[in-house]
Structure formats: C-alpha cells, structure tokens
Image (cartoon, helix red, strand yellow):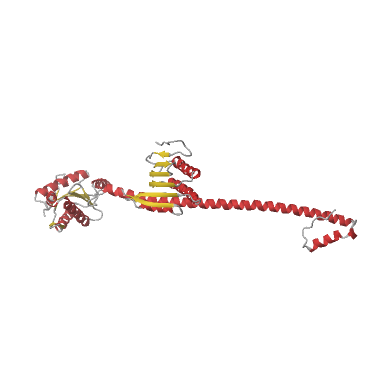
Amino acid sequence: MPPAPLPSADDPLDVRIAELLADERYLGHPLRDLLEAMIERMGQQLTRLERITTISDRYQSSAREQMCHLSRRYDQQIRKLEKAIRISDRYQAMLADLNKALQEASTHDQLTGLPNRRLMADRLLQEDHRTLREGTTYSLLAIDVDRFKGINDRFGHEVGDKVLVALARVFRNSLRDYDACARWGGEEFLALLAGADLATAQLVAQRLIEAVRGLQVDVPDAVVEPRVSIGVAEHRSGERYNDVYRRADAALLIAKQNGRDRFLVAEDPRGDAAPPPQALC
Amino acid sequence: MTQTSGHSGAGADLILAPTQSTPSVAADWRSGRLEMAGESYPENTYEIFDGIISWVQTFLELTDRPLRLELQLSYLNTSSIRAMIDIFDRLEHFVHSGRDISVLWLYNNRNPRSAELGEEFKEDYTFEFDIVAIPD
C-alpha cells in the first residue's frame, strides 16, 4: 500500500515521516501501519477542508460582487433622482415666476404700473372692513386729468400715454407707503388714503395739485404741462367705498365746473353742519 | 383621446393626441423620428411614458437606423422628468455601441429659461443634443 500523499514536501516533519514509512526496516512494525493510516486520513481531511474553503470563498466573492453591483445601481438611481429633482426645481421656479408675472398683469395697469381697478376694489373692500372692525377712517381722492382729450387730440395718444405715466409717477411719489393710488379709468385715478381724515386728505390733495403744477412732460417741439382736478371725500360710518367714491366723484365734477386745477371736498352725506371747506386753491 | 395607428410593437408608429396634461407624441418608425410637444403632468406618468419608452427601446433593438428626437416640452412634472431621463439613458446605452442618435431640444424664444432646462437634461450624455430657440 503506497504511503498517502503528504500535505507538504517542504515541511521537515512530513519529510521525516515519509522517510520512516519508506524505510523497509520498519515494515511489519505495528506502529508503522497505524502511522500510515493516520497520515492517509489526515490527507483526506485536508483535501476536504480545501474544497470547503474554495466553495466558501466562491460564495463570498459572488456575494461581494452582487453587493457592488447593487450599490452601483443604487448610486445610479440616486444620481438619476437627483437630476430629476434638480430639473423639477427649475421648472417650479419657472412656474412661480410666471405666476408672479400673471398676478402682476392681472392686478396692475400695464401703462402706468399702478394698481388697476380690480386690485384697488379689493383694497377698498378691506378698508371698509377695517372701518367696521377697528373704527378707523379713510379718505378717497378722485383725480382726473384736466382737458386730457385736448392733449390727445393735439399731440396724439402716445403723448397722452406719456402724460399718464408721468402723472402716475408724481402720485406715487407724493403718497405715503400705506396709501394706494390706482388707475381707475382712462384718465382717472383714485387714491386711497388709509386712516386719513378730511383735514389730512385736503393737505394731500393740495400737495398733489402742486406737484402736478410742477410737472413738465417733454414732447417733440413742445412741453405739456398737465393739470388735475380732485374730489375729496372721507368715509362716514355706514358707508361703503362705492358711496364714498360717488361723493368724491361728484365733488370732482364740481371742481371741474369751478374751473379745474383745484380740489373740492365732497358734501357730508349726513348733511351735518360741517360745511365743506370749499378749499379752492 | 389617444390612438395608436398601425399595430403595436415592432414597426408601428405611435401617435398620441395632446391633452391638457400630456404632450402630443408622434413616433415614426420609417423615418426614425420621435416628436413630443406640449406639457406633461399626467396623474399616471406610466400610462403615457411606458408606450414611448418601449417604442424607443424596440426601435433601437430591432433596427440599426439613426434615431432623432425632437422635443418641445414647455412643462414637465417630476415623474415626467424621470421618464425623460430614462429615455435618454437608453439612448446613451446605444450610443456607446456606435448608434447614430440625436436630440433636438426646442424652446420658445419668450421663455429662455427653458433652454437652461435643456442644458440640465443634456448633462452627462454623449450623444448630439442641440438646444434651439424657435420664434413665437
């Protein structure tokens, strides 16, 4: 029976055992056969151990590869999602801007940039509610450009537009931040003076008239010096903004009849003493 | 709302009429062109994009002809963006084996930010990706 293959020919112990087993002097010795059997069993077990290790290594490396593959796919998916989110954010910012522009367009007069009638009506409604809730007051100035048709007829609509834009700038600069001035109609503006009583409103009206008197609008070969007339009314308890506006507008009409370029205080709806100051200027 | 002309699958055109929340789609098998135009924010993105993605995949697998995408997409929701990236990824895969593929990203002159969106999509891809303004 040939000796079992030894695990290693380099190992001194293995070499010594192999020599002893090969030595004919020990043939038949009871320990020799036992040693030979033991070495053979050891060899088999080593072989089995190696096979197990090889298989186990293979499992491990395949698991590792799968992990790497999954993690790579995961990274790719994350990158894809991040890109989608980035682009989506851009689209949303674009929509938000568009929304803002639409909002602006629907609430502001395109020519002058002032609030339009719709936005002003909202503001006035809020102001009405405030007077009920907090007992505050407000005044309205109905402002109309004097002889505007004449300006248009003489210089053309482009110049007329230029005059309106210049006037809008004057109004904006002459009012407080919490007041509002809207383009109410063609050449008519409406100013809301929050919290202002009649005395304050008259001061503001006077200031507006004077500011407009200082205005010169350059047009080819001429200078247009527009003037405005103003009707002034303060909110009285029980009134809605439409009532206040009607009174301001009626006063405006009389201011026009009285010679324009002036303001007039509306009559008090209660017909109280408080005679309208008729503060012509 | 939607209709598919020809038979589904290989060799078929894919024609989808636009709706309020989906773009118009015209995929022409013979000329190798896929056109999409409009906005895309459907409730179920897969309903519309599954067909488009599988048309692209089938075309790329069954033919070796050039493929040209013409896109004029003014709004995409996040899921639609993801689906578009999915399509572009497939294009990129085939470009690596030498396939002739190009994308034309059209945007309205009045909305220059849409060009930036095209740029954002274009990033990472090696195929031809042109971003072109069209007048109003």
